[in-house]
Amino acid sequence: MSKSRLEAFTDGVIAIVITIMVLELKVPKEPTFSALMESRYHFLVYLVSFLTLAIYWNNHHHLLQIARRISGRVLWCNIVLLFFLSLFPFTTAWVDEHLTSRTPELLYGGVMLVADIIWLLLAQELVRENGKGSAIHEALKDSKKSYITIGLILAGLIAGVFWPPAVMIMCVLSMLPWIIPDKKIEKHIRETLLEKERFETSKNIPE
Image 1 (tube, rainbow, N blue to C red):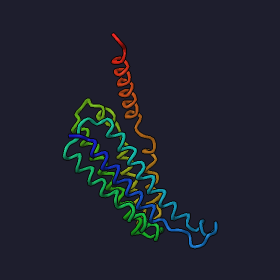
Image 2 (image 1 turned 90 degrees about the vertical axis):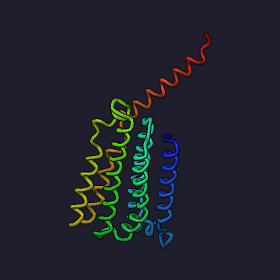
Image 3 (image 1 turned 60 degrees about the vertical axis):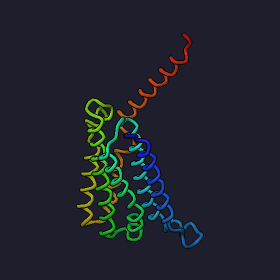
Image 4 (image 1 turned 180 degrees about the vertical axis):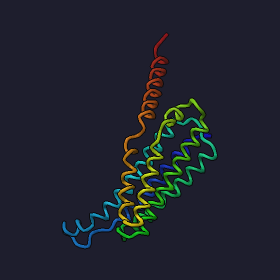
């Protein structure tokens, strides 16, 4: 099953979600720097959501680069992941309006938690489809980043019941391990490209 349509569809959905989010940003009421500063928390919430989506896109791109096969289960995991990512404009706007309120913060963290769980399932399905010994299996077999992320968000949700801003703080911390893509994946991509270049070069050498 071709993965090109999966990648193209994912790229399109994430691009639309980011566009919707930026359209939700409110313009300051007055043309002054003081009015702009009053909007700093609105921009901060948007920045957190934008970086979250960017990190998902970046790591999704790397993950699919080393996958050779996908299955129906992979497609459905990806669709469910995109569903929860598409909720970010709504949850971001609600938190933006009620930054220190419990329910919007918990919903924001809950959406991110489920998205992370689906990401883990997506990665596991890709490993199952490509088999042991595959590049994606070797890259992910010792990875604990998903479990760390899920644990941090769970801790934020529990703390958020008593202090709502804890949810956003833990969501930000959960993103940190994912800012830099997996080094094993990057190494495999570089080696694959190098082998391809060598092959192309050898084809062009006259006998």
